[in-house]
Image (cartoon, rainbow, N blue to C red; front, side, top):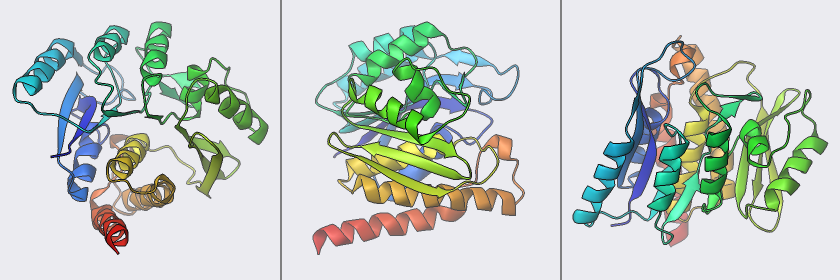
Length: 276
């Protein structure tokens, strides 16, 4: 049985990380397991959150997986506790698996709280083992050691893409905001494609987790990454609109439940097209 392994934090308050990845993957019908890296009382945009290191538990879980011969075809990584945890995870990597890394470090030109230069260096090393990395523009700048600009321009994004190409063969840069448009750039090893959608002028948490999970599902099921990018961008917009419509507290993350049928139908359609 080909399974997905979701490596990310468990957040008690907030629909981010595993809290959104689990219902998304479950809806697609793919078997999966989780490997929690950190236990958080809330996601890190809240002040004074409680944080529990699960590094030792991760190692015990992975050892138990080996005893059970519980294997995974595709691995998606997200938030880690610290740089030492990342290095230990690298040491246990199986190069036969498809590794997708969402290098969660920061957004809007700033590092997330509790992260430092050692964390950046460790994630750079992890990304070098990945089959695909999915940074936002801030994280892309950190990965290739380029300062984030005061104003984001098309020329600057091209500079980042060219620098990333010197180290990484396959990447998607998300959340590039230029004026009233959000862009996603996909480099497949040969060429770069640009996708766009109208920006919703507000900040919502968990969108990156949703995007990286849906891309992972696409790769795991041999579905066109380009088709999934287009679907994922609209899916996220629909979820944001639901969050506003149902007056959900946006700081807790966006509502995905009303759009799960849409995801199920898309995956079903892609499978049917492959068999016709």
